[in-house]
Image (cartoon, rainbow, N blue to C red; front, side):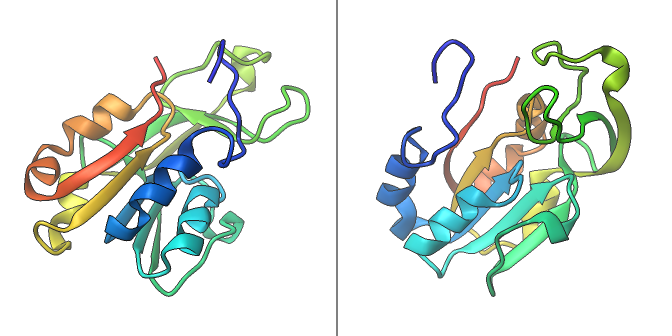
Amino acid sequence: FSQGFFFTDINKNGEGFLLERVAHLIEYFIDGGCNKGDVSKYLHEINGNINFHLFDIVDEEFIDFKSNFTTYNKAILSDNVDRELIYTLPKSNKWNSSEVSSLYIRDDYNCKEDEFIQMELPSITLDDYAKNFTKKSNVFLKLDIEGAEIKCLEGAKKFLANYSVSGYLEYNP
């Protein structure tokens, strides 16, 4: 990571380095902001026995990753179980990006405010979602949820207390 630019190649941005070292310890992998599922797919190639739980706003047919142990959720990880209003930019060559979604209208893309589309989607807390996981399981939490990280963690207090959780998150102010 440097000056606001990132490397999407898992082998070059540190994600691969980390995941290769912890893959054998993971029972549940929660992929918040899975996009097309590239990180989960990479991890599955290392350890195919992990239970994957993917979250994103795209329809399931756009996810490139499938396994016998995968649950896809078209939902927002949040601090409440209800619905969240988000702002999204469809994939476009204009700003050279994939689809971008956030709780806020972003000012870090070369687009106008009126190009954002408002969407309301179901939301869930990790406290509620993971309550049926085996207690004291090893859970790896990856959050790339475009500014909703704090809301997600506020809805994960019991989850964090009841499971052995490790992971990483993108910080997006």
